[in-house]
Length: 203
Image (cartoon, rainbow, N blue to C red; front, side):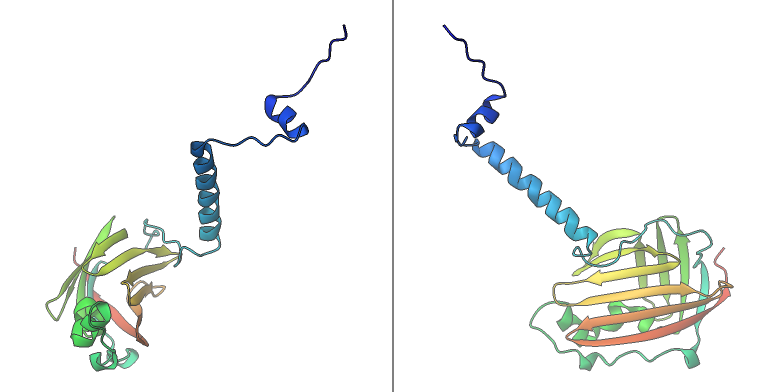
């Protein structure tokens, strides 16, 4: 009697013999999930996740602490709320009702006082409004807000289902002039720079 030795695993032998193995449902789901995760990761690397990657740690020397006064000659005017076309619901309707000054008080305020902490900052405006900004992602009303740094700039990105706003804060080399660049897209789009000069320290 001749003995025949068959090498390889069961799957390899099935492949040679033309036999197709049916995977259990759990294995198929696991394979699909793995491919989806890989696709999502690649998409994020290519920028499909939206917006820049923000660092929640303030760079050394970036200190907004103090009292800031508006430099009027160097600053753009706040937009007229009537330029926004209202939806029946959503952020665009609130902006059209005058919420642009409420949600982004830096647009109309003549001064502001900032207290900065390692994980956040609080801003008191001359208008009486107060805003608390925490580094990282959080929700405030209808806005989802992401705050953090790109190099030496503080980015505050606010998103709603029908609107988006970006605020970028830049300090001058001497640290005493603050430029706040604001862009709002809510049906109509506008961008303006507001420039402030530090006049005193909080602490």
